[in-house]
Image (tube, rainbow over all chains, first blue to last red):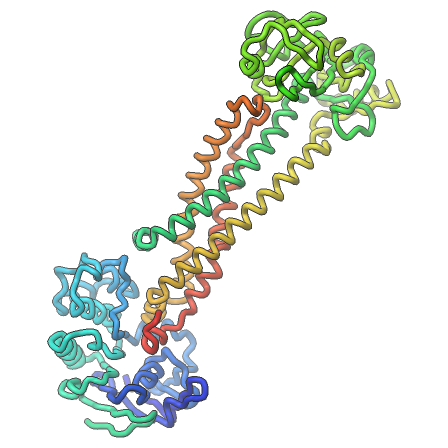
Length: 210
Length: 359
């Protein structure tokens, strides 16, 4: 799957946070969007992931314009996964139930639990496991429907450096297996793992490194 | 089913508040409907005892104000097709020390409608007491009704609370007490199919009277309409209060669980799925609240029925039809009260999970 963004602009009130962004992201790649706070990386990620409508410009998935897709919820469920800075696991559900929450079929859950190293914790609640284990469960939830691409916003922001590197390695591994990852982060260590680095500054793409 | 139960348990404080709000509203609807239904049902049952046709003063709003000549009873008995006819005086008077008690002056042929528990039927100057008032007055040998003393000849047991908490006397004594000949005549027929014909004949006996089938009299009886309307209005207010309670509590629940619904939206769960999830949760609370309210209502009605203060006049009646009706009302209350907060939850913008982190 190829994601194309053409002429993206976005305003929050009168503040222009994206100013003509054009990017193309290939399926199966690990793409990092980096930049300082306020550079527009999170807004770009939100628009690319279909959660946010741009003020101007279009986003295409395999040539289809997102704003013209009939059922965006259904499209998102079939094609996109999300990992947030805070795990946002539902506290009254076990890790397994959290992963199963949006699953169209449950056959992948055991495999994911195993490959993410949390199969023994699957019946625990989020407040009974460590921060790194929570984020692994959140990654499993993002991958449960075998999406083409997973978007992650500061996924290591609440983790220590050891766990952060572990998350990047997981992303690297899953992207090698065919799932695309687009990760917004201010952590420069991500550059060691990403295939493509999009550097944002003041709402524009400053540089793209492959 | 497990997920809604877990969600309810996790939010147990607010779940409890919603449950309480619903239980109180449902119990209020049950009680007001049961009590008003009980009053109507008791009075109807009393009139229907050996009464296919009721004869009252023409154009009267209440049987208590009706005044007809008791000699009509003899004339009615002569009409072909009439099985039994009995005159009654319906009144209320203080029975020392009770401030107000139902008094029934009846012709002798109606005494058999009051199954004796002890003693005998009253002669002139005597009364028989319903078992409830007999207990309340601590087994008296005589009673003072409107400053006049009567000997107690016997005690009867009636399933109709107005009678069981009342006093029955001879028609002549009732006439002296209330200064009237009779209030109503109740007519029992050989064949109900003849009712129209017999009503016609009775109406020709006196221009000042009005005969109706007891069914039609009850349907048109103003007192019943007033009781029913009051009950409906209070029930509707309880219903609205229940909805408002659910809306306000569910709005807080949704606010507390914004992240949860934002996550659901981000992973592609449809708005409908989120709305159904919340409706399902409230429906579970509604069903439990309904069961509890039903139990509480039975308990309260039992207490009221046996409370001396009410003299057995309030016999709430929770029928199967009322149970079904209130169950439907409870479900509607839950669904209507939850819909708006659920709609709001289904529209929570998942971007806020990323950009603000404040959900």
